[in-house]
Image 1 (tube, one colour):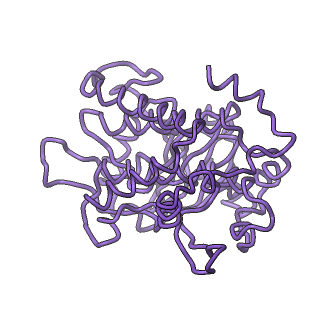
Image 2 (spheres, rainbow, N blue to C red):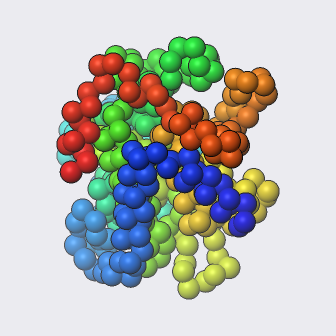
Length: 350
């Protein structure tokens, strides 16, 4: 816990410059507001933007409809992939749904029919503007498929690729298969995210985390990172894969989800082998995400430090810079490059 607090303080110190302080203030306000409202969301409340519904039932979609909509799960329609499975862009007008994201879960994602149904019961009740909404599902045979709302501007990590000039270590990394999809080509033709939009993203992620952590039965994400934050046309963030985590029963302190995550975003206790996932772990990962948003540096890959050439991780590098009073060196100067539409800041800082 001491190590966790130290790194969070380092991340905070890295953001002391005025613009980044604003980000922190927004995030703290959003997360604190959610904690104050703990237990005030009634289970019987009808569907609403920030409520919890006990009546919403996701649409059950047939495998035939899904295969038709995804061209038999064609690789050409893949828009994402992760530990739970691949995600495809699809159109399901005959199922009463328009453009959607179809996540075909890996065979070992769920161990049985009953377990999947239990998870679906929880997923169908989640209602928050910063959480990706589940619209339907399919559980034919051994197949387990989820249908989500489609979030058109793609994942945050692709947008953060724009932060780094060509001469920096990050851009010399070999592009993954994901950088070849159309959404990334579109992103690369645009400017980096303005500070106003970054504040909006941090504020939204904080709000979504607070909502999930403060449900009567809290839900832990376990893997908060840039690729799990999807952006809509207004750059409002939507956290993906939240419902795929196990539900924590707050009345049973010994019951928890299995610790999980991505190196660089994971808190020290996860790295050291703990089997317990906690809300504190999510908050730590969120702190690392804020640092990534401010620096444009990936936390999950080490990079060579310019002065001595040694490989360092983002949090380690930030710690050293703060200790040397090098706060300004942490911030991503590329955001201020000529031509950046700073006028967007005013809109999102209202």
